[in-house]
Amino acid sequence: MKHVKTKKITKLIVDAEKKAHKETKGDIEPAFAAPVKWPVDCVVGPGLEGAIACESKIGYVNGSKGELIYQGYNIFDLCAYSTFEEVSYLLLHGNLPTKPQLSSFNEKLIEYRNIPNTIGTLMGFPIRTMSAMAALRAGTNFMRYECTYADSPDYIPDRSKIISADEDSIPMETIPMGEEHAIYEFKKGVKESKDAGLDLHPPEGYPACYHLISGVSSVAGAVARIRQGFLPIAFDPELSHAANLIYMITGKKPTPVEERVMDVALILHADHGMNASTFATMVVASTLSDIYLAMGSGIAALSGPLHGGANEEVLKMLEEIGSVSNVASWYKHARAKKKKIMGFGHRVYRAYDPRARVLGPLAEHLVNEGGDAQAKTMLSIAKALEKEVISTLGAKKGIFPNVDFYSGIVYSCLGIPPDFFTPIFAVSRAAGWTARVMEYLKHNRIFRPRAMYVGSFDRKYKQSAGKDKKLKKK
Ligand code: SDX
Image 1 (cartoon, protein in one colour):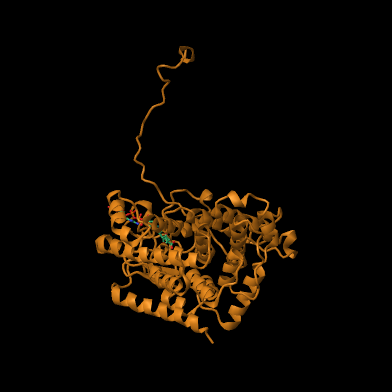
Image 2: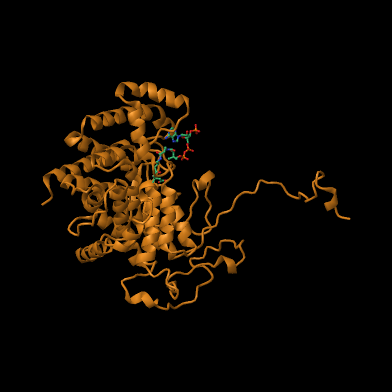
């Protein structure tokens, strides 16, 4: 029987969905949700805005309507009734798991959460003085070394299921031929590594994705503990992914409500179209670099404040404002300085980010149920600031709260240190990163856009007049 208190969370999500339906109009955007015949025409802005990079069934972000879909399911539905484990399986395999599929997937996640060699290697590094995201990225590289035979001298990657244009062997200016499959195939056949008998696994394929989704949470937990001056805590095999994450970071086993809120937060962050970190991961994977190294580039991209660290900045911003009575003057000053308000705006959403529609009420629920005076103040400032921004930039510029505006308050209520907000984002997005890589590799083509050359031509090299005469040609 669902814990009574967590049923309140479900109701809060269902109410958020009703509010979204009432407030937003708009339909599916035909320009971004229909099969394509390559090559496609698209209007592309700076930063590849509007560019179509590939076809995908994994997720769809409806920017005008403020809607998020994972493999055909609406995000509100998944938050209200599913779990991060189920959603990870859904993103990777295209369907929600049956009971047997879920239990075998869970068994693997539990088994793969155990990475003592990786954690041991990690502890030999100055984790306490490294950025949390740099430590997380290092952890994925150590996982690659300790858990896979990628570095085994006689390992030949299994690319029999991937076919890919080998750019070096075809003219670089190949006109996209709309090929379902690229022209060249790597040689078939795999020589098992001599270590294959150990419990090592290949650094590619679905087992590697499961290892990464599970192991990166253990790395995050270990890094969090070391940075707080403690030893890492071993996961509890009885706990869910969300509960273990809180436990391994804070050392405290969460209440059912805390576990449920973290589970919903992990579902909300799991995938989001071709965002910068997902695209970075796919670009690296498209060269047939392995998924561990590819995910390291996703972590790197996510560490930038325009993408991942905004929720930490939001808390600092709310502290700087200090009280509800200061909101109007602070905001006026910020606008005068053309400051970007952290936690607002989005490259794709021109409507309220559906994830913020869930995280806002979750933050309110946690603060009202048990938040201290500071948390209550933060929340009231946030709600007042939200009103100011929406009234001035909402309809006019399509600037609304995004996923980062309330997530910091939620994580603070769960006892997560602010420098761990973004690693949690990465722990969740590991599902979307790996799922999109696996999907793309089925019809792989190395990402290679063009730049518009606006430089000069025909400049001639000549010895500069001031050069030493002796050097002049006789
Ligand atoms: C995430 O892509 C994804 O899906 C990312 C993400 C995911 O799940 O992977 O959703 C996660 O990255 C959430 C965003 C977290 N970052 C922030 O909250 C930082 C603050 N937001 C901005 O930096 C900005 O909104 C971006 C980076 C998120 C989007 O910027 P764009 O699309 O490049 O927009 P822009 O910078 O070109 O701005 C367009 C206009 C500008 O005004 P004008 O120059 O046209 O007059 O909108 C204004 C901007 O000044 N604007 C803002 C604003 N964001 C855009 N003005 C005030 N505050 C803001 N936050």
